[in-house]
Each structure stands twice: as structure tokens, then as C-alpha cells.
Image: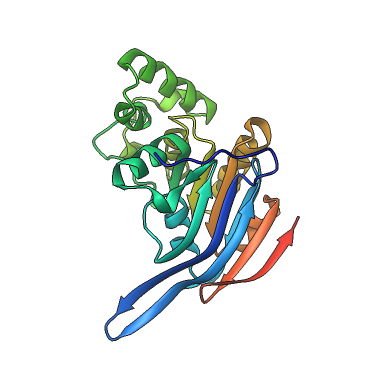
Length: 236
């Protein structure tokens, strides 16, 4: 895996002149048009913008789910834009925890099995997987729901399982794409409070993508995108 040594003053995440284009019929859509930013370890960042602004594209590139047309992404010393598919898979499983709006839990698995699932690919022994998954479900307040399947859980409980799953391989970065989008206001607040705890108590670097302005009350910095470009950045 391509990796560079980083000094103490090097940002945890560096994005330089990032471009991502998509062809739509005869037209080319510039989803990201020269985006550059740095994120320090332990920050809680909100990437805001309307639909089509490029925020989800940016998250997918940062998470190694997509590849840029040009530009550089460096995360914790890894040159993401230089990795092949195998190394990207290692990067995703070891460095990144994903949380999605639609939860993406496996319907036939219990909460415990869903949290254990990512650890299978990192070859964590079964007994350790089980113990770690149990502890994570307790961490998110679901100790009494370990053997429930997603259909037996509320939306907020499903998102808590998804958060526990995102933590399964102890990633330094949590990427959350509209994590409150399918939740009511009260439940969304509970999820944001939990993410805040993970940031403040455990030092996780969290990048949340959202069009909901209420999430900015939890974050340390807000970055606003429009038409694939950063238009404003505000500190909390």
C-alpha cells in the first residue's frame, strides 16, 4: 500500500485540486471542480450543500468508494488516489467507518451479526468478533437488542446498529452520509449526540454530509459546496 511519512504538522486529511466528472448523455457534469481542503485529526466536519452540489461525491472519494479524474487525497499518510483496488479495500476496512442514510443493514442478520460482519473481512477471530460486537452495541445503547433483526428495530435503533458496525474495525475516521435523513427530529438528535460523543470522548475524526442545517450545531467546522466548488467555510 502506498504510504508517505507524515510529520506532526501535516494535516490528517489533505485534499488537493480534486476533480470528478460524470458523463450524462452528451454533457459532462463537473461534480467536483477543483476542491481543496485540509482536515485535522479529531475534527467534526459538516459538508453542506443542496442536492447536486458534490458533497456525496466528495465523501465517496474520501472513503475510497470512487476515484477522482484528477487531484490528490492523502489520509493519515495514505495516498488514496494512488491505491489499487486491493489496497483501497484495505484502506476502507481499516481506516474508515461508513454510516449511510438508508442504514444498509443485512436484513437476515441480527444486530450482533451485522456488527460482526466487517470484522470477518479483517480476519478477526470469531470469539473476539462476538465480544467486540457485543461491547459496541452496549456502547450505542442496544445491549438488549443484540438478537433482533433490522425489521424488529426502529429507525433510530437501526442507525445505532449501523454506527456500531462503523466502529467494528476501530477506524480513525467516520464518514456519515445524511445519517439523520430517515429519522424524526428527536431520533436524529439522539444520533447526532452519539456522534458527538464519539468525537469528543474517543477523538474520532468525523465527516458528515448533509443538507440539514441543524447538524451544524454539533460540528467544529462547516464547509459549504455549490456546483462542485467550496463557497464558504465557517468555524464553530
